[in-house]
Length: 337
Image (cartoon, rainbow, N blue to C red; front, side, top):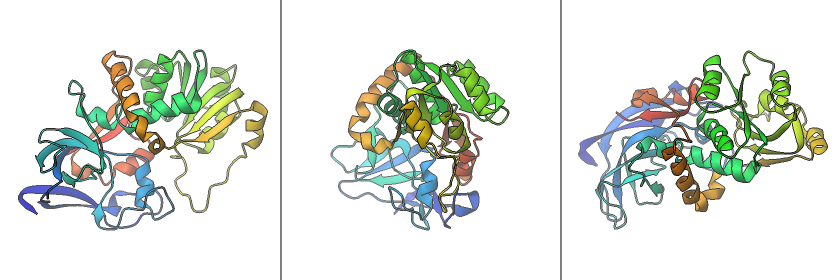
């Protein structure tokens, strides 16, 4: 252990069932770990808060094993290398990766997503618009929905980290965009700052009727971040040949038992629609392609930075619940203290 450096950590100390809450975590301090040959030490600057963290904290079948009890909570982070005994990583390099909710992380490079080379842009973007959220929006829309100019694209959680990028990319591609979100403030953000043509506040409006008015020719593309009642409403407005990307299930707070809702098979059949699940990890080899294009759009002012930053490790335990309650506007991050 490196006794001269204090490592603030957020540990998962009890197993949640559903959305993790603050009392499932403990913030502690320990000496920063020492590095061995072939390793380097990252001082993290921002921690990410993502919907996937619910699944990582729960002991349920998933694409990754659950975080162990009393282990550092798994998360993406970005930071600067402060010590290195690795030939490919030097002190001063900025890197993003699966470093967890901790101030100092040791890595051998295996959990690094990439070196962050956009030194003219804020490093926090490596976790949002130029990170998994932006890349998810890029491939989930372009490959999953395959929009063409003139299409009507509907996006749920439209003011969130992924949704805000999806809407802006769709606008860049010449589409008409309709965002669904959960407050008047977020609806205003969608139309005034994120370029959506129409925003629907699902808490105050009848989503089915609002969609019928906003999409008179039907929905060509639906980027689904929620499932649940919002998606049920969209399914009633599909255009012929609609394409649906299922990217998230934030409206479903529990998977045991499996939630039951309206059956969509007939709507898909009548519209000759395609509905496809999407996991960004399938696109890892193509990340550089997306990041290069996204960074260009950021520099050109076509893709706006949309971040909600919490201050310090003590805010982390309640952050996942905050995300699922929709209290964030944009990419939810924790600035490390």
